[in-house]
Length: 308
Ligand SMILES: [Zn+2]
Image 1 (cartoon, rainbow, N blue to C red):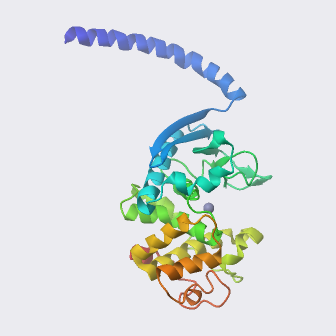
Image 2 (image 1 turned 180 degrees about the vertical axis):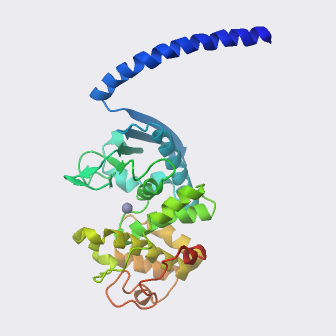
């Protein structure tokens, strides 16, 4: 035992000397490496339909983010698969279909200190389908998704399941991490859960000019962006309340299984799950007209959402 202890001790001593050497020399080497090529961490994990590769390009100093992001990516996609019963490979096939085969089943995350798109600082954007340029991936600023604050990452990953129409998909991918956590599909600690609810912008003031979501008003009027997201997530609370937990789940399953969706088709799915006057229920929210069943200040408090 003592021998063992001593030899272990000398071993650690040697490692100590060696690591002192590496600590001194390696930063010089890695600095050189860094200036020529940005580090990329590669991970892989298994989902229901097979393997998924995750490439994390981290251009910030906070390298521990990579492992955190990998962990969250795996967990949210696992949760989506079990909750919806739809494999990630199936849901994301329309996205991967249009990409080169080398990109198949590969998720790219890009973390930067500042994220610009066409010269404007946007904080983050999603270009997994290549519509916004050749560089593929989910681009995020570290300040928006530090470890322990995964809301934006969870939101963007949800878009592999939900893309169109945006009034629907933006609300769903913001709401689901919360719902999945509440229902035991996704483990989030209290701070992580809070990051999700903060992303909803529930306190956003109702603007004087308040167009319906189907007009995609966040594109024509970027200053109304936070209101668009706030309104779209609260539209999901309304749909959930009207359909109940099982009905809402069935609605989401049908939405995620449809390859191309229009607002008209969404209303058809809603009526298939439960026949109601959806035009009246969602008037002012999704379609043109004065607010009717739900005034614009509905679901502004977290207590109302906890009851769902
Ligand atoms: Zn989004």
